[in-house]
Length: 116
Image (cartoon, rainbow, N blue to C red; front, side, top):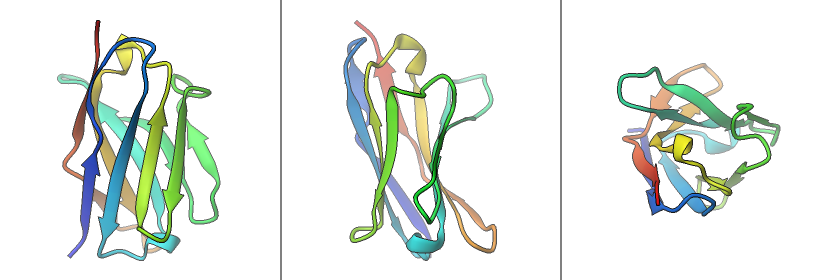
């Protein structure tokens, strides 16, 4: 049974920081590509950041230089450190795991609100 459990969302002022966590179980974490996506109501889910099994990272242009994705293999957790947050970063953030055989799994999402 695959489970991706996100946490760490909340309300933060513009310019502030948050760290999202996603604890994975039921997958070969070390062989999976882990990603973060986000979605605003009425819009499509959009890519934010990804990290491959060998540690290569990729970011959306809108978050490059402000967000950092990382993993902890000891706890099967992927993190998204978000700095210099802007109101336009407000969204539900979803954790995604893509396995070696291209199975795709999603977490339940965590709300991030950037507002003064």
